[in-house]
Length: 539
Image (cartoon, rainbow, N blue to C red; front, side, top):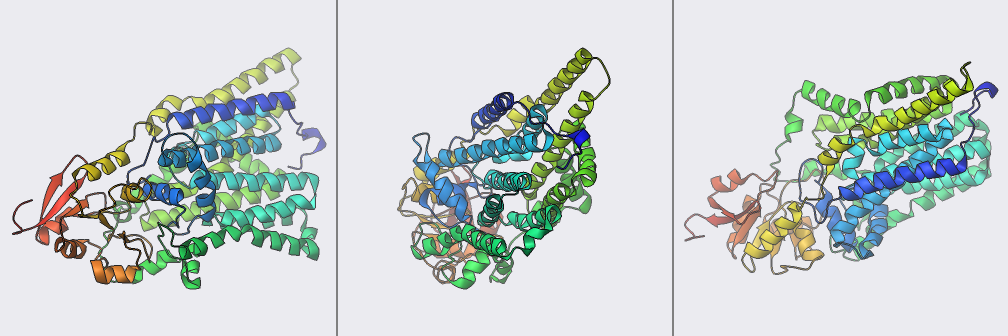
């Protein structure tokens, strides 16, 4: 910020700030680890649509669904070498570690912007304990790392503004490029950061040498993207998009594969319940997530602080505003399309708004500091306000702990054990993005099975429709009937060779198999069913 001499932000005592920041980090870390999922997760709406796939892909250094997430894959793979839990737990643990690191960076940002450790801590707690962020910190997902990278970029660009040293600006250029290799939401940084720099010192853009160095470092930050085609050409054990050609690489990293999926033949994809919901229902869901993340009093403080920043620090207001409204627009588009986990795209927006909360609380404490009252009364008032600020985000912790507690979630493990113990040798199992990839690729169990995933995705697939075959989607369609996204044709072809089972997960329509001439026989405890052609003689 650029406060006047009468509103100068004084840095807090370093030791007190360090102790409070450490306490915040330990506290949220304790909560995240205490509610962390213990093993492989089930496929489920809305939170764990991608989790079981990510857990398998990270462990075997695979290629993920669009946009590939190369930085996440390589960085999180390092966690799989930790001597704790199983590989799936270690991937979950990475999300918690990224989450704690993001909260710590948020705290440092709050210190820089608010100048009060209590204001920074209160904002960091409000963000770290917000429902959406907490839910992503206890499962295998990419969003806590996204928050970490966004917070890091904002922190470094603020350091540049304070010190005006080129090395920080060059570091920002590199970090923006690196962020783009993780999640496409970071494209907002490529707009917000230049706007911030321009409003701070537009002369920077006239310095040709500096701009060329920045461009070079930005491109250097994009290097992790090379992981995708390299691993594809190395025949990665799990490769959802096969970006081994320039065109498929571009489809993957730009998200264009989400558009290409509509070209797949034989698609019979039922829209999600959210896609079919009326506008008022969708608006209610959006309002629930926008208004339910922070305590109401903090939301009021954040709104007032955003207005304050428009007058006091326009550059910061633009930086935060572009992040907030850009993420909001993205979430609205995904909500309209019926994407069930649309709300996770709001996490950078919540981070931006949380910073406004810290700024507002800092302004409040400084205002009290300037009151013309006795020193003892002023100290008592500041102490009371400080305690209140720290207590407010903690009021709903017990309920939030119960709501986000996945420490007893063994759904994915139960699915694996059910399939491993009940499916006949050499059988075929139809499934959709389930823990079974983890079973055969990471745990190397039941490798006698043939796994087929013919069901709908929201992007165009090229490989990893069938295991153990490593063939293209086109060859899989010819050999296994996977071009029929109902799974019926795949079941018919597989039934000619031996037993066929299906995991009746969400988005798998068991009634279709019944209408197609199969008896659907429940097997085991998981949603596992044997598909028996009528007239085949027994089950």
